[in-house]
Image 1: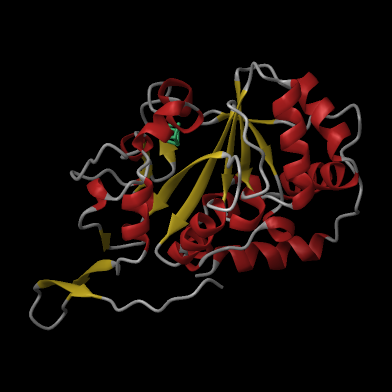
Image 2: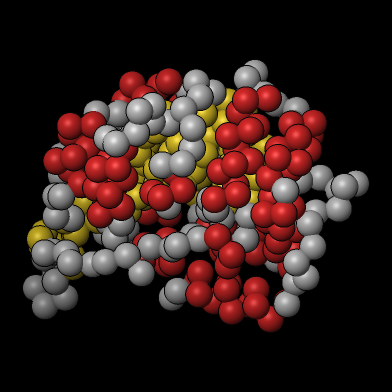
Length: 286
Ligand code: SF4
C-alpha cells in the first residue's frame, strides 16, 4: 500500500490556507524519541522513494492528523515566506542542545536558507538535518554544528551517486553521512563494510546482524511503540548529530556499496525452502 500517496490525497482535501505560522504559536514540535523537531508537510516537500512510500511512519502516525498537518503547513509557509525571520523565531524557541530538521517532510531551497542562518546564530546547538533530496543537501553550508543525514533505501542508491559526484565540486562540503532503511525481507551482505553510519531495519525490527552502524532504535521500538524509553532514544545515543556519524562514514566504501545489487530473502511456497535470490534491480526513484 502506498501510504504516502494516501496521505497526500487526504492532505489535498483539507485545502489548507497558505498562511504562515502565527507569531504566538510554536514552530518546533516535540518528539519523545528524537527530541525537538521541525516537521514539514510531506505533500509539499517530499520526493518519496518506493520504500518510504510503503513504510513512512510519518504518513500514518499522529503526525498525519488534521491539526498536525495544519501546523506543518503553517511552518512551511513561514519558512517559504521569510526564511531568515523563521530562523530567528526557531532560535528563540529552542530549549535543547540539538534540533532535528525534518522529523517529517524534506528540504526546500528556502528551508536551506533558514538552516544556514540558524546554524550561524546558534553555534551552541547541533543541527541534525535528515533529507532524501541531494540537490538541496548540496546547498547546505559547511558548519561544524550541522550534520546532514542523507537517507537512503534500496530504490534510491542512485541519489547517493549523484550526491557524491557533485560534492566533489564543492570547496567546503557540509558534514554528511548516510543512513539506510531496509526494505521488507532485504538482507545485507557486506553491510558492515559499506561505509554507512546508521542502519534501520524494516519496521525497526531488531536483528542479530548488528554492524557498528546499527541504530539502537531497532532494539527499542516494537510495532512503533518505544519499549525501552528513555534508554532507546536519540537523546542518549546522539550519533546522528555528532562526529560519531562522520567517523563511521567511509566514502570509498560508500561508492562501491552504492552500485551493489540488493539481496532479498524469499519464501518459496512450493517446497517451503527459504531461498536467497539476487534481484537485478533496475528500480528507479519515483
Ligand atoms: S543512531 Fe542514535 S541518534 Fe541516530 S536515529 Fe538512531 S538512536 Fe537516534
